[in-house]
Image 1 (cartoon, rainbow, N blue to C red):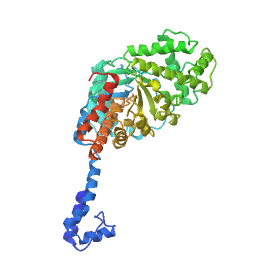
Image 2 (cartoon, rainbow, N blue to C red):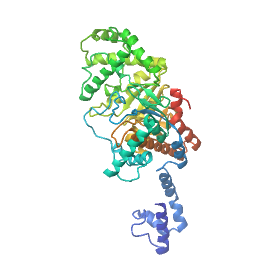
Image 3 (cartoon, helix red, strand yellow):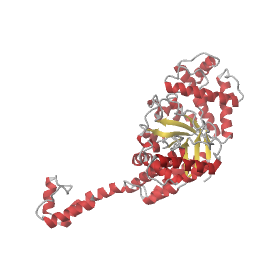
Image 4 (cartoon, helix red, strand yellow):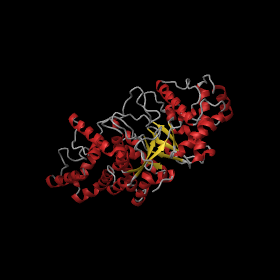
Length: 482
């Protein structure tokens, strides 16, 4: 554009020194006053008049892509992926059901975001980078060749296959949200984050399972609670609230910690609102005792007991040094309550001084309409965010806007994450991991580039922030080796 404008001025002066440029080539053709001014001005004068416009255009063009030096450093950093649903190494025909306590597969089909569709060119790039795919198309015979190559590599790598993928993605540690870990998930690199929503659901949940998705999810949570109770050597629901905490909750969390858990995860937004209200321990204890052995509490009664149990679990997690991960923002399913997933609803918990020894991580950072809410919540001393899922749903430029807003507020509270998860044979956790990681790294690079260009930070500071976001903050938060 800049060259075109200069050429237009030159041609105008050489051909028609006393007349405005014609033929629709000048960007100022329809601005009468500028036309007259340019007609009378010399070539040097015209360039001087245009200089402010050229500089603005140059800055805008420069921010379309990240600074090469910044992006190169971001790409070079061995990452800590704060949130994933990675699958274990599976044999042909074997299925892994432990990658999520509440998988979306059983739900009614819902719309897929545009950036997550198979047509995303980054999935094609993933095939090329991971498996040496030699084509730039998705012809059926080529995809069959890809699947054969992928299967061959999985067989060759065996139990090392998940770590092989991590090396390809330049990820050192991957936090693995799973019901249980499995074959091939090396505990030195794959760090367990178990699901603990089931622990807040000891009562009959009929009244709170109030839509088709929740009916499915509450049923799954009941099975998981039975598993936790069996592992705690508890055959029946304890009759008192305190006994339930002592015999089921505390042993489960301690067992998870001993098995290598670095945090615990709540997907509560799929089950209810994130508003855990004000603590009412005495009322909750009475309600628990009333319904523990039978009967169906109302929705309000059930939620009140859930609120108190969540708080008890969060306190116990803090005692054990386990950060509490909470799903915030957008979710799957046609009945997902987006309003109930607003991280601002957690204020009664996050502002409670009794939780200052418990660290909370807002998973997905309020993905969708609540990213700015998440930015303000980071101002609390024990609250962090990651941008997992956002790098699956958003373009590089859009996620850069989110990240810049966060980094201008609390850069030391932001963490990288991909939310990679299994899918189809063609686009599994490996491909989503590659695509999401690439978008996330590029978005971070672009956000930092814009901050440097606008004079907010130096390039040296930009590289410092990049290391914090990609690994440094997570290393400190989870006590990991550098």
